[in-house]
Length: 292
Image 1 (cartoon, one colour):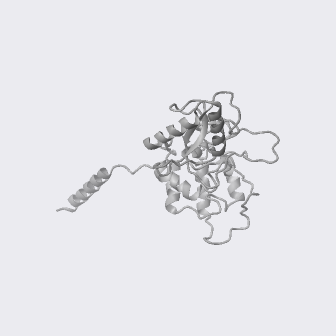
Image 2 (image 1 turned 180 degrees about the horizontal axis):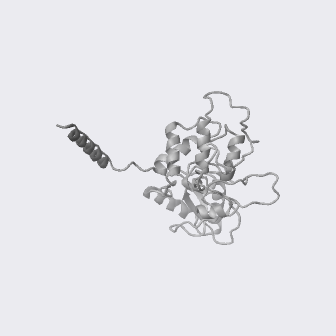
Image 3 (image 1 turned 45 degrees about the vertical axis):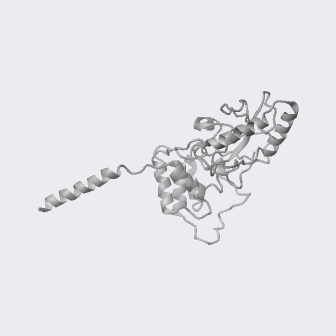
């Protein structure tokens, strides 16, 4: 057999093998990206008061982006617009109208802000099990700088050791490459809203029927229960692992899609009839989660 024939056979086998395997597996936000955020990022980026209001506990939060506005400001003399994820706005356009900027979108020839923050952290890793450098200030008094994309170069120059993840064990090489590949591929987010199973839906119906019975006494008891349970994460007996629910007020009765009443306080008068509903909790649940 000639050398040319051998080479042709080898190339044909390689091509055949590649075709059999199909194209490289595309990234899934649920399978590949959220687990990294959950392991390395949500400790600082999942509660209502997360750093720069960047919430990485869900695809909705990642797509919403970040804001320079502080949630809690003791010097503020007037109430600010609430920015509760899944409550006060939905989708990038609505969040942009509330002052949020994308950390996932490329800016012209510049990579996405998240990509540059991750690259800064990857290039300047901290020494394992060593004391943090004095210039990295943490704690309640830390000033979150929240640079905009056009401010990143100045931020990196002034804070070369404060890339992301900040002040913790950094990403592994595989995690870093996965996130950068996702960011470069257009940040596809395949996350779907959590929905109750059939067994959970039956229990949800029973609980909602209980709390929405007609009558003055029944309404008083229902309000009392709601005001004591609206912060709780409800797990139903025999429910699916990771499925939790929360009590909300809706304009629509049980059996119809929830039309959320998102008043500033949970017992503010909405001026309409209220129905108490169990709503699946979306996103990662963390210990430091707090209500506004």
